[in-house]
Each structure stands twice: as structure tokens, then as C-alpha cells.
Length: 316
Image (cartoon, rainbow, N blue to C red; front, side):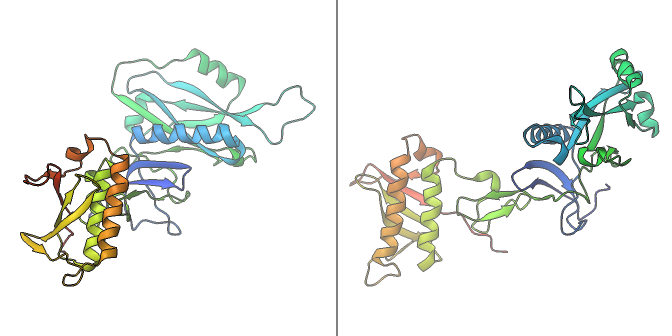
């Protein structure tokens, strides 16, 4: 795949079965609405492990598997046997079920010259060659990715096992125009979900700058609550001396009136914010306060007065 202005780096998954996996893709290149991701060798290895785990759990007759065979550019040709599960059509009169298998022949020295690995039946001769020929050499690392659709292999399809050819950048388009890949999501502390490549939430927090402790999440939630009636709010003072409570709200350097009968806030709104803080304090440890970005404010009447600064919402 050649990079274009449409190409993005993101993560994809298939429900909770496969992924999330880092990849590169063109969002406009879709099959029935599904994505066509291209993976690095590292991501392909991870995907391989996930598919093999599913096959062991659910049976090879209903799961495609991905296999990554690694070697060297100057290695001699090798043969590799990939074993699957039992055939659905094995002869029950036999003493043991025979597993499905394929043989992959790899011309390592020819891969850079557009030569391709080939897949054949796992004959006794192929098994003997696989035992005999080992990967050698000290040249550049190379990888061959194999996609096996065991349910169709069992039916005699000659396209059930294929080599996944890398694109111009050495990435592997696995499952494109075939699997139901969709964008993986990340969840912001404000409660909204975004596609993985959308790194900034509407609330102003970024994907990589999410609070790590309950107090940090509570600060984001308090900001949401207060901004319902005072959208201009940028920070609040919180007193933790006894029960946690919001004691002042600011828009920049200007304090917003918090009196129940004259300001924008009512008792229910402030009480809701206080309850969020108190619940977070029940889960917190002392180290959470500085790591959550709360700033200690010197005060004659309280030794536990902190300023919470709310995320700045994007203006564009």
C-alpha cells in the first residue's frame, strides 16, 4: 500500500476476538463498510498468536489462522509444516484422527527478487524435507506470512491457504476485503469513546494524557458537571479538610458566584460535584493528589485546599 493523504496510523479489532492491533490503512478503502488494515511483522506475530489461541479454544474448523515464518535473506530454501486440527471428514474407522496440515516452501534468497513461497499438501516427502532443512545464514531478517482458512481447506479449496504478500512498505494486508475489521476505540475519562486515531476528545483531553488515578478522573467529571450550568468554568477550588467539597469556581481569574440564589449553580449541581469527589477520595491514596494534577493552594484556614483545572475544550 502506498501512503497517501488518506493513509492513517490507527488500531483495529474484530469485536473482542481479535486485536486491538496497530496498523496502517486508508479509511476510504472498505469492503462492505469494513476496513483493510496493513500490519507490521510485530503486529502480524501478535495477530498470529491470537488466531492460534482462538483455534485451540473453538476448533480449527471454524477459525482462520495466521502464521509468521521468519528467516534470513541468505538462507537456503526451507520447508515448514503447519498443523491444524482434525479434519471434519476423517474416517471414523481409523484408530486416530488425522490433523489437517500444509507444507510451505520458502526460497529465502529469492524473496527480494519477487520470488514467492508456495503452499502444497503436507506429504511424507514434504515432512521429511521440513525435518532436514533448517534456516541458516546471517543476512537481513525476512518474514513470510501465511493465512490458512481451515474450514475451506477441509473442503479441498485450492485458495484456502495463501501467502500474504507484503506491500511496498513491507506491511502485510491481512484479512483485508475479507474480515470484519473495524477501528479500535479508546475511552476518555469524560465518558466519551473515540476511534483510536482520533487522539483528542471533544472535552480537551488527549488519548495519551488520560488521568491515571480516581482523583484525576473525578476532576474531569466535576468539570463536566459544573460546565452544564457554567460553560465558562475553567477551574475549581476543592477543600479536603473534612468531607471533600467544591468551595469556589472560576472562569479564568474571575470567581463565579456559587450562591444558590444569585449565581448559576444550584444546590443539586454542587452537591453532585461534591459526591463525585467524595467517592473518589474513598478510593484514593495520598500519592494520587499530585499525580492527578491537583495544585495545592496556600490558605490560612485550610491546609488541604486544591485547585482543579479543567481540560480546555478544542475551539476548532
